[in-house]
Length: 161
Image 1: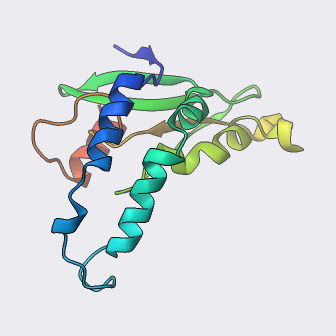
Image 2: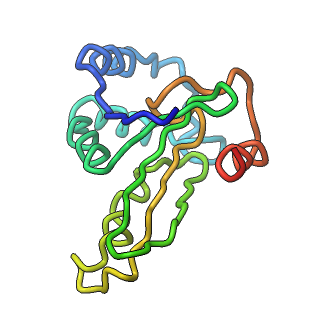
């Protein structure tokens, strides 16, 4: 069963995340001063500080919720997706897939342009029904698979189920 969905992370959950990030034991991390063995430590500290000090989750939540979001279950796996119905008399379906470690956020800036080209100087008959699923277990959209699944299973879920 497909159900409408709205992203709504509580302030309590956000505060718990911020508290964990703030308490991270940076002093226990090796600092080899570069990127050769992973992410640069100073860069990670900078990004973490941005997350807890400047990042506006509610603003990004609103950008996601601007579109029609849904959830469903396939093979007991929660699946989240955006489905923006296109303008025009017969819009073609268009599936936009992100990879790892990406997310649906990569496509937020083009969904409306593809679904409603007439708003941007195009012809509404060129519109698509835009479907943007989240990879299973990504984001805050539900319970992921009980064990890892690979690309073949993911595509089976999205294209066959």
